[in-house]
Amino acid sequence: MKYLPVNESLFTNNRKNFVSRIKFNSIAIFNSNDEFPRSGDQNFTFKQNADFFYLTGIDQEQSILVLFPDCPNLLYREVLFLRQTSEHIAVWEGHKYTKEEAKRVSGIESVFWLNDFDAILHSIVNYTEHIYINANENDRFSFEVPYRDLRFLQDLRSKYPLHHYERSAPIMRDLRAVKSETEVELTKKACAITRDAFIRVLKFVKPGVAEYEIEAEIIHEFIKQRATGHAYSPIIASGKNAIVLHYIDNNQVCKDGDVILFDFGAEYANYNADMSRSIPVNGRFTKRQRDVYDAVLRVMKAATKLIVAGAIWNDYHDEVGKIMTSELIGLGLLDKHDVAKQDPKVPAYKKYFMHGTSHHLGLDVHDFASRYKPFEAGNILTCEPGIYIPQEGLGIRLENNILITKDGNIDLMADIPLEAAEIEEIMNA
Image (cartoon, rainbow, N blue to C red):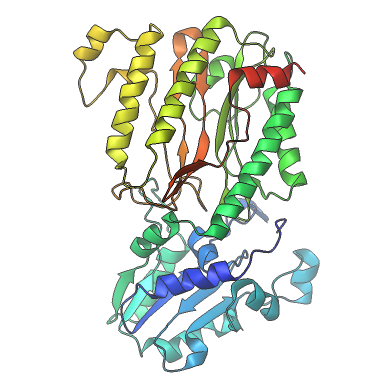
């Protein structure tokens, strides 16, 4: 891992919070992520399961966590299983955790090699009534290939069919949405790296540069500052590419007079930033571009004020939709008479602003959280309104990351250039 060590108290406290919510006489088992084949003899770069990392801090494949807080044998109340290294693995793959290193990282005292897992589990599982299994219950996710936790569940049910199987996901959904002080600091670090990459880009962009050259500048700054890399596939969308919401080809030349829509963020210690900005290729917005930009910025500022504890997801997005509708009328894109006759289920503003304004942010860019639970202190949400005008080949999106506190909210990206005049000033310095 490139990032600096994270204090193990984060993971110890996360485990305490989790086991405090499970039923008496229960065991909970969490698996690391699968390794995914990239070619005939290579895997993709490993990405840890967010829930497993949240509870252990272990950033390594082929690992298992067992939590049994009521276990009669104190040795097995928290157990971490790791892939045992060897001289061969050390030569071909590099360093893997030793037991002592894993103890320091996770705060778990009982660490065993993975080949001990079956025997140890069998020696304790029959003293439990409930088995908690983790699964990906993010409502944005769908799968065709059974992942590790599901395969593990099938195997466990065949061996222990009479236990009561429980879901860990509802507990994790509540816990992960509320960020601790350490998690906020890690997110701030990801935001700071993202800021530096954006300022670097502002000084680099000019007519004739390619989108992929800009992407190279961004990843250079990320890796230079110990980020793992991109939090998600970066969007470097110049001109008409900006009206494609998930444009990731990044292979076109940026032309004089166009606007580039950026959507990128750094990942640091598995925590993510998520930023969007729109800048003029030549360093100066045209009047029309500036008008659209300022309209999006006004929506963003108004929406940010609504991101407070107690706000309801749907009510919040409905209110932002009203603000956006007013701006679109001001830009001549909507007619107030058409708006008056619109179908409330398909509001007119969706023609030019078709995505949501916010999502939770954390270990996942679209973090695991309930869309039916009111916002609460400790949530980090994006705020990302946009206006996309196909007939003008123009797309503008602005996005910052907002932390809710009991006293209001804090913009974690407040120090990243946002005002059009500031962007032009940096680009023309």
